[in-house]
Length: 351
Length: 259
Image 1: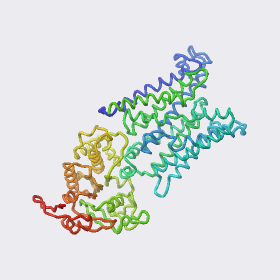
Image 2 (image 1 turned 180 degrees about the vertical axis):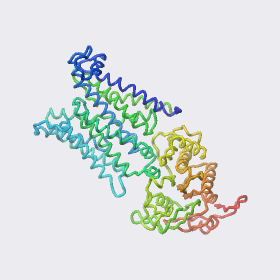
Image 3 (image 1 turned 90 degrees about the horizontal axis):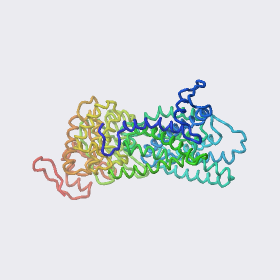
Image 4 (image 1 turned 45 degrees about the vertical axis):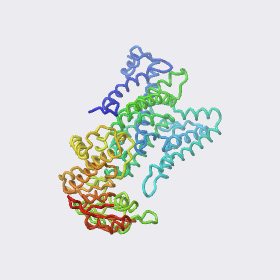
């Protein structure tokens, strides 16, 4: 494959690099935290599996930390990062706009309303009603996300089909409306609730559990089977909707499928990890700058890179201000934005 | 091959097209001409299926336009729009490769077709360049290569079905040499059985390759006929409100419009 002067790296090489980085970053994620666990112990714990006792130099406390806290957290970060980045890539393709992100279809704003409603009024629900390992806040966020995206989709769909432009505008308006609702709820909230609302909006992976991992894994697996099939059609969509139609793509159904996939993917990630900004916007953009816009490479590479970024960001979030934790959404922006800017500058120099 | 039977199109109260009837036999070249807003592009969009005719019907291969599924018709009909807005930095090669989306001919065969299609529009040197950085004329040539690649087997004359190519002002951004290149391509593929319908503004350029000319004005079809039938000072004045002389080309003997 010829390396093009407008491309920084070939998709194959990028894939290889990310594939090497993924386990390394994951191990780093397992090692870091309030209690530092050396690599040898991590490996001993992982490879001893459930087999009793023989955990090399690892003591039982370390074993517990890894198995119950860190491993589910790292796996959840991997899945959420992959989901967010892939959905971002889908939406940017659908809107034919590299600046589109999950917030545009109102998912994040809707999820915030749902979560805030539960935080403010949920105290009346005394029981910590768990559904599939999700807290009431997560269920509220998921419901809010799905409801707003359905409203926006309905508003943008007329007899002529779904207008992506209308959807964008409706998304902005509904997000503003949802933002007002969240602000009202924040105003009504007491200090503790207010803190929980704003922390939730910065995203965090503290609530990671094997139940949540399972939920995310099923969703990712389902989407991972379906989304790659759309790569060719998404490429055609970049030319324009009518051009895609002339290339044999059933554009109306494609749009519906893409909206359902991305709403589902983002809603699940928001439900388990809160609003984590920037991954969905930036990762596909970075990958596109590196290897070009072909979705057959862009979608899997975005998933990998999103997973890596979120695990790294979460590891950092746990150690920067130990024993407290930074919200992971803050770290993704802190890590990602300078890298993104650097890439933009490099890219500009090359042109 | 392509039959347009008393087609009307009315988006809102003002009809865009009224009672248009044109017959395009296999391998014919039809030039749609007329002033701005005459309905040429609208007619092309009715044929391509973007607009649904509100009256009359379009027939492709003896089958009504609405009955064709997008995936089936994309096998043999390609459409070049007036202009395209591609914001993503595909290389020219990748843009042409999108033309093979409807087919499952495999990457090896597709790569051959892409190279050949780029060569055909004199754009081989653009293959690895980023599409967004090309000039207007270069972009249009790459897009032309894309639609040719889509119906490549038909353009080469080795397809079992007949191809259709719809072009909307294909030469608008081309320099003189590439305008003539376009004419050569259109002539060549039509002799191999591809039916071409194109919107054009340059009467002389259209005269070089059209078997049939259609003069349109205000959504009506003013005249349909051969080049010699239509290129008369009276008709040109009636349709374009321009006084023009029609002379004969000193070498080729075709009619030429001089204003």
